[in-house]
Length: 75
Image 1 (tube, one colour):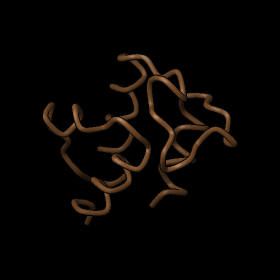
Image 2 (cartoon, helix red, strand yellow; image 1 turned 90 degrees about the horizontal axis):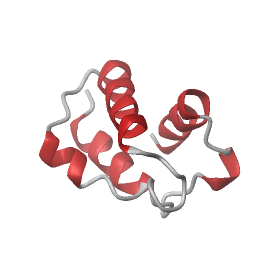
Image 3 (cartoon, one colour; image 1 turned 135 degrees about the vertical axis):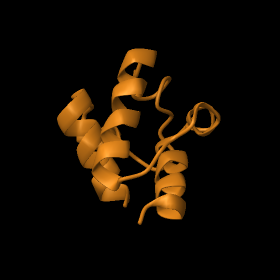
Image 4 (cartoon, helix red, strand yellow; image 1 turned 90 degrees about the vertical axis):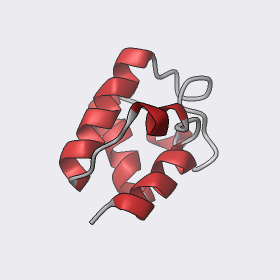
């Protein structure tokens, strides 16, 4: 799942692949703004056939948070 999320970050948001780790913070380490976060959420919803609530989005601080969430809910 980490590799899939990493690929989304690199391909869709032009994040440097070397910067993407489980501990990397989306905003402070990867420079993702709120619009890009919304785009990431939409991409994840489409790719993994999940719904992500606003409360879930608030818990997305690190790449690892996103991966953990998707591993729990993805079909």
